[in-house]
Amino acid sequence: MAGKVGIKDVAQMAGVSAGTVTKVLKNYPGISERTRQKVLAVVEETGYIPNTVASALSTKQNNRIGLYIYINDQYQQIDEINMLYILGAFDRARKENLELVTVFHGSIENLSNEDTVRYFRSIHAETLIVFGMNKNNEKIHYLMQEGHMQMVIIDADLIDEHVSTVMIDHRKAQYEIADRICSPQDKVLYLCGKEDGYVSDMRLEGMRKLAEDKQLDLTVINGEFSESKAYEIVKGLTETYDVIVCANDLMAIGAKRALGDHTDVKLAGFDGIRLMEYVADDVLTCRQDFYEIGGAAVEAAVHLRQGHKGEKVLLPYEITYIHR
Image (cartoon, rainbow, N blue to C red; front, top):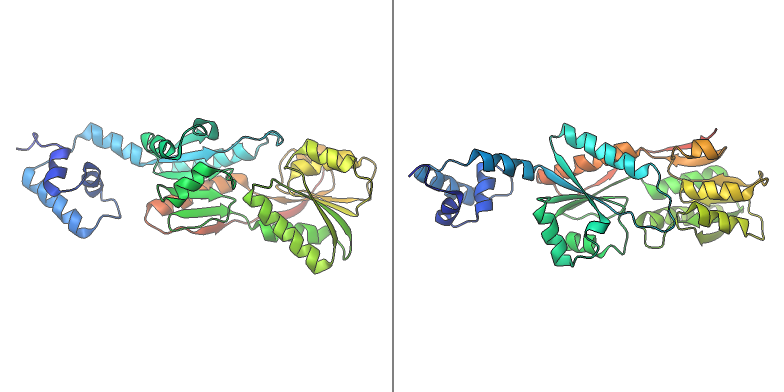
């Protein structure tokens, strides 16, 4: 009978799916001992030999992780952040013998939730790393809440049994940046990020906490993470602030241009992008290692695939001045 029996025959005789047979033969976690023994007994009885070509293909597919990137913004300029995320993720995946499949938001934005699930299944990505998560991303929230996939979310404080998050402590970092340049009762303008952003909320919480602790005269304006919008806001100010704190470096660059000769106004950004070194001077920022964050996201995905529960991974950062 050996050589005539296929995986579907084994699955039918064991009362399981063909996928379960594959997982048992590859010693995947998450299979009950009873099911494992039942499948192995049928394999021994029938002398089933897996097709080596199909097995190799299946192994490759099971080593596949989706890398979802959301770039859909009319204000934010494209900088090096996403490229460093991707490079770090691909380099770490190579070391882990994993294959990354990049999926941009535009590939699924017109699909229904159910079709989105089918799309990721069709590319054999059972685990998904998400860069650029926001509150209005219905499809990713659906995948997460329904438990369809294991997920690693960057810069969103969302943790579940099958969901991990990788980020720096944005609240603490924003607090520390502003604390370095704000004196008690200073008049402070805070240019926050997007209203639908998790990272925007965390940084704003840190800024509000400092304002409370130092009794700052705080004004908050939404700068959309945009250099041009920050320029327009600061250029149009009719009053002078002691400090301008920006929720990212692009806005700090715009604010720096708008300030012109007002060198007495202290300024801070956030992220530590390389562009700051060329266009701004004497600006305080929080330098993140985006390459390392991308790599840590792959490592967190590996942990989920090994059967670990979702976790929060906090990475280090550096508060530093940018000088040309």
